[in-house]
Length: 610
Image 1 (tube, rainbow, N blue to C red):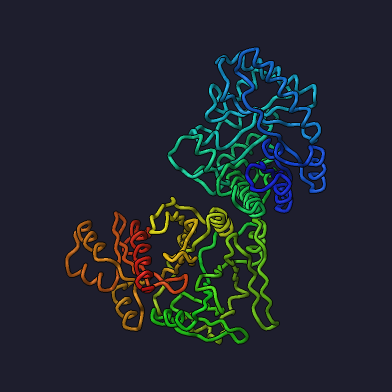
Image 2: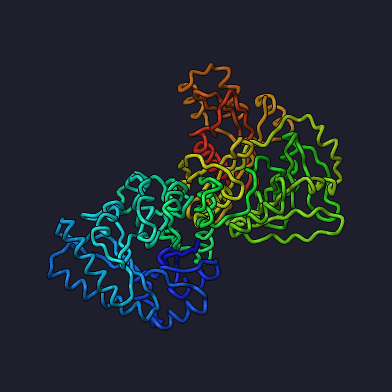
């Protein structure tokens, strides 16, 4: 399907927004009136720019407070509307968005409203224009899409149709299942927006917290499926009011937006039977099976000796150095970590390699989601791992059977690696993301690897609120947690620091592993005594167990599914290691313990600075 985006979604001037939309690959745009009003370019110049950029001008919006008014006011509104039609002729546009009246409606009479809509459509007809009427969720008298459709139906004019906006429908908890009952030719336009569940009034929720499809809590795939079943074949457009987007580079936001439209179409295709002709309207992406295995993790570090020692204390074996590069391979059980030294920049997870059936198919899927390709030259006798950059800079590499021999470049014996009896497993990754990349990184990872999102969680840190979003693969083989870091993350001296991410390793014998690792030199993050006093009170633990866990730095949680023990290493640069033990069917991450960890890391960092 053709794609579009409202200029209100982006930062910058109208001209900059148009250039960003064209560069991202959108087919068209909605011109938000405020962007045009402040532009130094004439309507003719904007039209010419759109033609040079090969962008359609799909919709002019919004024309507010048209209907449900007295006759005297309606005549004035028609005069305003005619002026907009004349402006649109200069722009070369033929469709205007008319949201339901919020500010001036005084006549709660469907017959009057339908009659006024018809008269407006007659004026549109004289100018060769079309009106897309939309029910705002907070409209005075018209606030549901079905009421909107009933009024359009009653007005009965060929130049009047409905605009369906997912936010206005889903934010009210309205049922979108009746969308297929609306004739496709009367659905003039569609605007898509998701939103996190915030429990706030719908107006500020709409004005500040919309996000791209797939980044919020609405069932956007179901909405798209109903839309497809209705036979809609016009543009899919994004209308996002979001404070972060208004501060972000428009090229980044535009690329993220287009990715969301490709994801939602692929999701809707999966909800339709293969013989359903409506699937052909939806743009397909290369399909791969859900990814269930992380092949290896690459850690970039300016402290390779300290990082190697940390891994060694945890039971990792040094396999060797790459025959051409300075990178080193460490292995424990099924976990492979590549250390890549750099001169500066700290220690952090720089890439993740995924096991896939066909790396070319996985690469094609990632590229269809707008990811640029990573260029890593190799020699003729080296394995090529195709990869892409994620929205936040993380690199994703794809490893299929033809590339599985890559460890031999570090001198590894593949048979010995396969026979490794170490029981360490990769439990999850925890990756920090900046505010302007967070939603895009979550959606990209979810869509590329075909993962599922769990409910988000907010965690209080000493330096701001951290929003955490966990993704899991369908069979639970991969757990990937993203943390949206506070806007400004500095130490107490005001110096910028890298928000730490971590690698969590699962073991079956945490206490024994912890004791052995500490004896081997592992520096465990100190946890305050108050935590253990509270722990004992909450769970009724015996004194000896609590003392033992406190000595080892072990944290604990328990629910109806099982128990969870874990500990954290001290932070090295921007990375630390977590050891976890899951007992029973426990699937969480220790809610509440993350705040304890963040506070302990802050305290420990301050003590080290003294």
